[in-house]
Image (cartoon, helix red, strand yellow):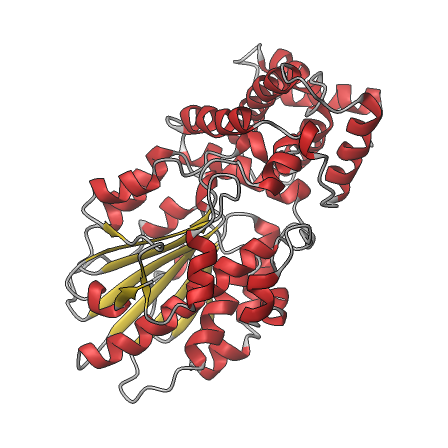
Length: 436
């Protein structure tokens, strides 16, 4: 824990990097003074200053990201203070220590962030991020995840493969929050659905092509589920395949690339690992490759070829990563990707910060107030001409009905969802939706 003098030096350093904005130090100090979120912002300040010094992030993007975080923490802190039951100073100190150590220990239901205040966190962040430049949102993600998130709070590729038994996934008790089991549930739902797409497309057309773009790949858990599921499919007319993982956080990107370079599932599919470098002039989705990109989603997708190949299906996946993007960035992604003829989105995520683990842990931690959520994701898909499946009445033929039921039944107090949106002549047959 930095001393007061060290924190003062960090604040002065950050202010000195933004002389054109004299309010920077004031906003950061106000965020540091919040009862609940001050220690988290303190670690983010230190991490952000380090990324400026080592040249990883620009000082403008870091300063803007930290000021946004400070403002969102101040608002969330004020909301929590209005609740009837809140953590005592001693209880709060224990919770803050758990968050700083990455230990998921939920507070009591009575002292959790209320349902209304949880939704307010999402709505506020979505509004704040709406007009922010891409590099600022990318910097905030790098600072947030780089400073805090580790094996306890991420579903790694290895853990996903260790937990592939569906019976265990659908029966994980709610109090078992180690490694975020709901992430693994939707990872395998995405993997199973893609396996069905792979099989069905091979029957629909003579020369099928599938490219998968995974947004916010983290350490590779979703890709692990995808490659494991696809490599288990035996088809005569194998689609030409490419898989791309997009990750903005440098530490996660290194883990992701290391995973793709050693993944047996990718190897059995005949996919060559590639670390994308813009200077090479190569495609981000070269057929026969599993490519990793250290970039934000919009930046990466702008390098995607959108030419209208009627035999090509583009599948965009994201598991608990899209909630970090505001509406404008989601709209940019949909607007760009809609230029391609056949597109399926498979999105596992929260909508409004109201799950038990969010209200009792993350919303009183570093992440909750910074989540833009997905309150209007269905409406956004539909506004761009996508059909959106309703898992309570229909499911892809390859998705285990128990997983579909669990995801469909996740109401506002569970807040775990799978959005399946599709547009194009090939997509309905590829999904082959059937009655739930």
